[in-house]
Length: 73
Image 1 (tube, helix red, strand yellow):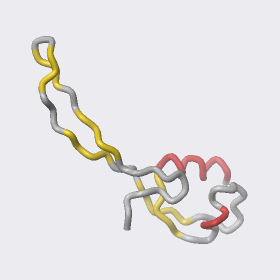
Image 2 (spheres, helix red, strand yellow):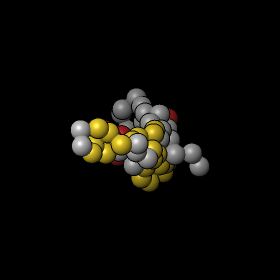
Image 3 (cartoon, one colour):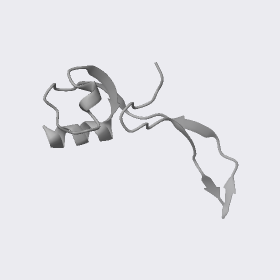
């Protein structure tokens, strides 16, 4: 299963931690940030157009979409 939110298409991305030492940035490691995906069951009587396709199903969605879903309930 891919680490991708099916609703907002949020995926992972690369980040760097910049270490500053004596006024200059040292070479720093890169790491991958993944979206916060969680299992949620979508109610069947949902009115939001983004969630209509998944009505009555249990899917992995990101935390931002869970907040949007909570507003429409």
